Length: 125
Image 1 (spheres, rainbow, N blue to C red):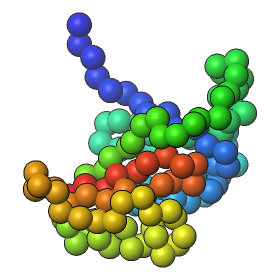
Image 2 (cartoon, helix red, strand yellow):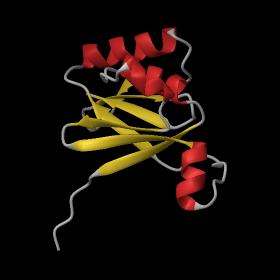
Image 3 (cartoon, one colour):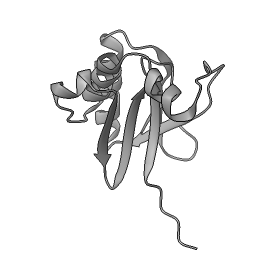
Image 4 (cartoon, rainbow, N blue to C red):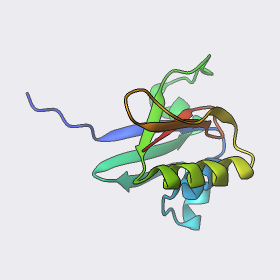
């Protein structure tokens, strides 16, 4: 069996608010997507899918508010300087800091920010 990761679904309370965060992270997402209930953005062959909670409820039959962190999404950046600048740009806009940029024992630079819906978004270089 061959398996390939196709899509990561992100459930959002407010589409524009969520997309603004990912735009600031570097994704090109048209303003027209702000009013959609489902948006997909391609990232190196994998799609990030954003669905409003109302859409999720229709598709899955229910929606339960998450308790705690269920997963993390990590984005690889091309340099430590790019990571630090991205972290500064996001936190200066009021996004919640979860883990300040730091160098790990295994040689990566690593930081975590929460997106508007509380998902952990890691920046790695």
